[in-house]
Image (cartoon, rainbow, N blue to C red):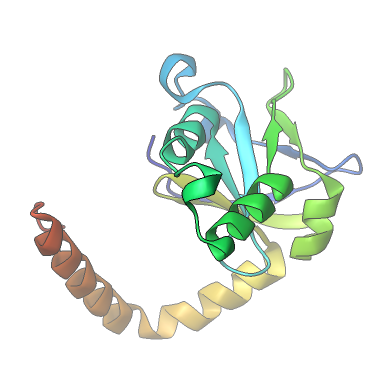
Length: 163
């Protein structure tokens, strides 16, 4: 599954978010699952949404608790305690736990973005500010990012990304 794009959405009064048809139509129940996992985002003030099977596959290789450092185990405790499995209803809406919305500072007006293997949920105002800050230096940031990706891929013996 490869996610791209930006969707301005609204969380309803019951804390439901409608996953856009453009995303749902790309999902394959056999390979991606039907549901989603939601976890605190890498960026403060965001929530990350993964297709069910992808999340389970990526987390299946985390070492057993007794092999983790104390901080690794605490991360595991925290992430799993803050995660939720979200089953879409017949209209493609997922019910987002209110405690996650509150902790992330996300209210009614939101932006859902595709970020390769995941979706990120932002408050619309926060994402607008993020975009406004990125556009002026986009060419310079793109060059730096492409350089970093080439270096990382070279370290892994993979093909270079396109320019």
